[in-house]
Length: 201
Image 1 (cartoon, rainbow, N blue to C red):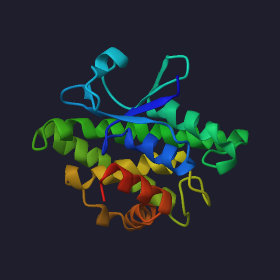
Image 2 (tube, rainbow, N blue to C red; image 1 turned 180 degrees about the vertical axis):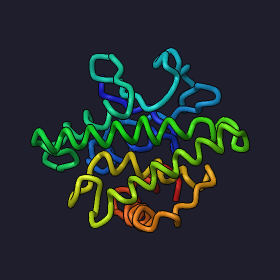
Image 3 (cartoon, rainbow, N blue to C red; image 1 turned 180 degrees about the horizontal axis):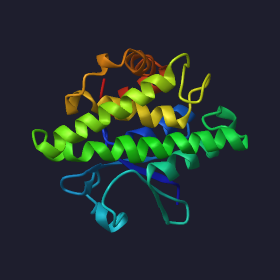
């Protein structure tokens, strides 16, 4: 059985799709409708992944790997020569630091907004996201990417979070460095190719 990636375009799972595409891994992909929990071939996704959300990779032995903080490093290690994850101990720790921050401080904070955009909880979540984006904006000052000179899996994950900002009524022009970074990543050939493959552009 060949590995298969389950994801939904525009969801956080798009980060794994971008990375797999950038690495040229050729992993078969199956999209998931998160409202019906049906895959594009009509399968019950909850029978495949009881968690019910994306992304997930079905491995060669039929077991399942879930969560972006696990999938993204796993994908990067399939082609280490591409350099999407550092090999040294400190570099790897810095990567984990960013993945942890993105998933817990940014990703999860969008939940209330997507549940009810106009609620009091959403307004509070929006303020928290903007505060965290301010931190990332400052951290990117003078750097091309989160880890410095090279694009990494953390950048792919952050890019997807930034694409959510317009839907959440968050104005990225408040963060000039981050806004320019988002535009730069959107024009990166591998990211653009992945977005075209998803039908997003």
